[in-house]
Length: 524
Image 1: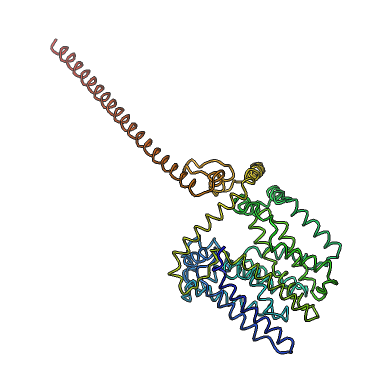
Image 2 (image 1 turned 90 degrees about the vertical axis):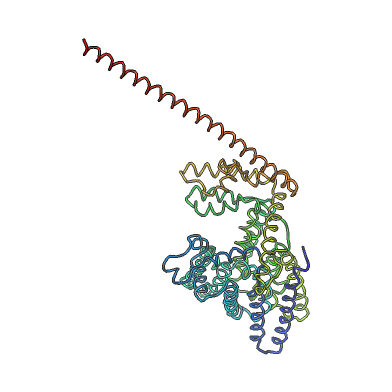
């Protein structure tokens, strides 16, 4: 970790902390805090919207935007099929409109973040009186990742946040409609529609205790129920969803890597215990509505029970992170004494900065502005490749013993699929990972097999040299074989020519002999 990488983020968070205390002071004197929050969102829009080559996913969105057509080309069907199928239709149309208006990618990104900030303004103003505090926690917990990297996820989550008021008012149609709109940006909005009944229920203290116990048992004993879920999906018709999950399941980078007890799990577990089991002792939680409670319970379940697949845990739990954000804000609002509020704020700020140091100190998050994007492109591209290689090697070291277990489970999946007559996955790389067999066309080994025993770069270079020597030997062998084949073909051609000449000579001699016989008879 490099401390210099996190300096811009800490400076921005320090400004937000100062604005939090300004907001508190205005609240104590019964003044309006609206304009303080607007200024905070203005800074948020500038900081996130003007970023350049920062993060892991920016290259993917940048290349996709370059392929986007204008509105006229879109209706005429003059666009790449890959562009249309990579992302959802809502995000594609947003790109088409921006491209038609002549925006560059960085202008498109800024406008995108600006619209997100407007939605955040209306949501936080509706949900709490401490909007700047909510923005600070949201930014550190998942907000930066959403609005700086996972652009499509950001729209999906924001639309869900806006739809929560329809859960409270029991307007199912409006709730489903908003989240269907979210599905046009990211298909994970389907989860929001599925969990609607769970958001409406009222959990008793005993039920909350049972949920906590079951989730902790799954986490502590590492019960890998996702294997059972995949088997059930393959068996009972959910092959499309199962095949998507399986792509992550077989990826060594995401395999069995989130069973550690980190800061996030400690915070989530403490919040669950403090809120549900000791609300009277901590003097908090009495004014939180039932919907927010249920969103947090779902978030708690996903954080601790989906550790089997790293990316699945991250992506699904982040969909409900707003539950934790609003709980933290409401905790502060429920405290009555000034001293308690001060102690609580010190703890929150300390936790947020520790969490921020973990997330914002990696090289891929080195902050670069869009004004220097052209100059930073080469440096970012090199760092991105290096980061991916380091992530892969680190995952191989962590998950050396996991690979055999997953391969055995994948054989079970293949047997189920074969019994149902389902076509195997067309992705050749995934197919090689499943079968552990090298491709006969490319003669390339699976990456998982290459780095099973040795991890350092020297051994990789040696393996690369060996592969190159094998390729050259193979080429020489093919060249010698081609020469032998040419010689054999020449021999065969010469033999065929001799046979043809011999046949022609025989036929001509027979004709001459017949002519002599016929001439002799005529003379007689």
